[in-house]
Image: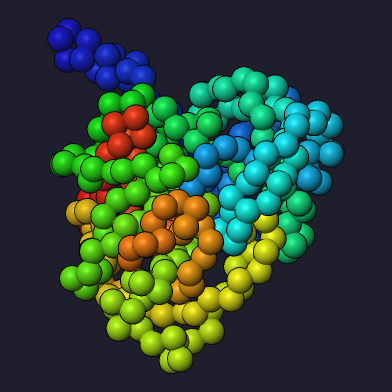
Length: 283
């Protein structure tokens, strides 16, 4: 009877909620977000203070205007209109109402609905498991990965930064799941021995404000993300305006994007400002 009771308790125990991560044609990590518009795919962005929608989606959904504000994107700042979202729901977490930035349509034409940011999930522990394509929003204080987390510090925009060691050089990394590729500034590039005249041509970065900036492309070695070590990791190199906006332009700095997380589960307790990276080989 005890065994049966234990079995019943096991099968009736609540299962941790999670939602699937889908990689969009653009390369962004997107998640299903529910609102008055139904369920649509939004970019999950730890590098965005607030949520945003693209203009074509906002017009299609009939979202009402709600003033304007200045948006700081990867490539610069611009005044942008706001629209009202009566509610946003992700993994059972609902915020209502929210004002969202109305972005210009994407230049690549890919029909993404928008971006979900810290205004929705910034009071939770985020389990961002890109290797297994799953995401969970857990109560603050939950510790789904064992070990001591990295102490994080806020940027000027209330995003989180962590220390990252690359080949013996210490740098400050802004955690940005909305960035498809990791960027470093030239302060860090120079310390790592990169030569501006010899690096390959990298991507042209548009950013949310659609201002284009050219980058260099390189690879760096021996990257330490807490318990995870990347033997080689790709980077784009440019002194983007966003480094200054985040208050890290005066030091070796990184915008840590998805390409460093493809094989690395990351957990962020936003209220406690702690970050974990799953060590290689753990489930």
